[in-house]
Image (cartoon, rainbow, N blue to C red):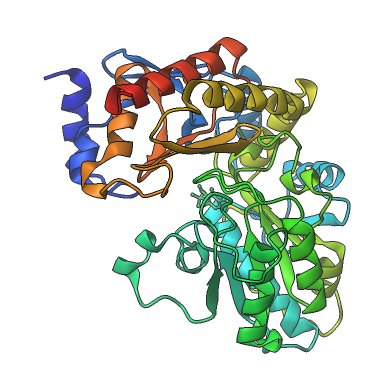
Amino acid sequence: MSLNAELMQRDQRHLVHSLHNPTAHLAGHMWVKGEGTDVIDADGKRYIDAMSGLWNVTLGHGRHELVDAAAKQMGELAYASGYCGNSNLQAMALGERLAELAYPNISHFFFTSGGGESTDSTIKTARHYFKAIGKPGKVKTISVMGGYHGTTLAAMCATGMPAYWPSFEPRMPGFVHIPNHDRYRYVVPPGADPATAAADELERAILAEGPDTVALFIAEPVMGGGAYVPPAGYFQRIREICDRHDVLFAADEVITGFGRTGHRFALDHWGVTPDLMQFAKGITSGYVPLGGVGLSDKVAAVFDRPGTDAWMHSYTYSGHPVACAVALAAIDILEREGLAARARVLGERLLSGLCDALGSHPNVGDIRGLGLIAAIEIVEDRSSKASFDPARKIGPQVLAQGRARGLMTRGRGDQIYLGPPLVSSETTIDRIVVTVAEAVEAVLPR
Ligand SMILES: Cc1ncc(COP(=O)(O)O)c(C=O)c1O
């Protein structure tokens, strides 16, 4: 038995893993080292990390600036409470830095330890806001099918992937989903304007629920899982609808934030500003856990208004000084190396490479993405868009063929996801393209 296999067996004796699945786990990897955009397992086998971990290790492994920032801060002050009446220099400085970088209407921040906590904080912020302005009935959250917002209980209810729900039913009341705008599969309702139909689903849902009951619409600017890019004009229309019905609009920028789509924050592609923006992952390049929510000035104003109820929401690790120090160092690197612009250039190379290599493959239905978020959707029949029987496990076979060729990535069903680090070289992007194409052809020869 290989060392990797032996360690995975040992690991399984005591750990419950995210998305626990004992069979899949044993076929997996014990990761022992990262070098730039590569990761290496216990057998010494090297892989291109074509998912940047989980879309988070944007700067690659081995960035000593980040290591030094963490060590320096641990040496000075390992931890300080962020509860009211306490703060630390790093959290303060990160708030100042984010206020410079975020959308112009957003200059207040609440820190969390990751994406799911950020989603819960966003939902609670929206409810807190409406209670404070005398509209306590506005409590519901609307989100998009296919979207992912995490798996804490409230985040799971907002997440639009039904596979995450059954073991944990009943879901909380007050969560509603609208159809995915997926340009490949969304069917425009008869008589609707194709340019705005997917966004108008939100207005339909708000009116069906009753505008006086809806607090929040939350959506990823580009959905990481599936790489669904909205049609042009989608978010402008969403903004109008939210304004018309006094619903807060939260951008879940946990994947898209900090450069991945080619702008610092992704709604800049469409010139739209949200009321709330949540982030995590890339803010520290995954070196330490940190997330948060940015509040628009309109929302933040109610926090300090006399008569507003106390914000009884808190995390021990909110504003953790070590995490904030690493975030500041990661943002320095992102800005200094111009990595948002780099993601734009590399993303175009990735997408056009995939289209050249696989665009005419009879089982590749769609290739989509923006910046360094991409996905390939495999179908049995291109003309009808019919999927393969899931029992054939075409997607997992493609991922396995990729792994055999030294490429680590993820997928769902017969979709193959890609999200390489922002520091990837052109050569690495080209190798990803070639390897994915070989993996698809190995499973589905033309
Ligand atoms: C868009 C988005 N929101 C929220 C989350 C949840 O983040 P976490 O796993 O840190 O709770 C994720 C994780 O992948 C995500 O992609």
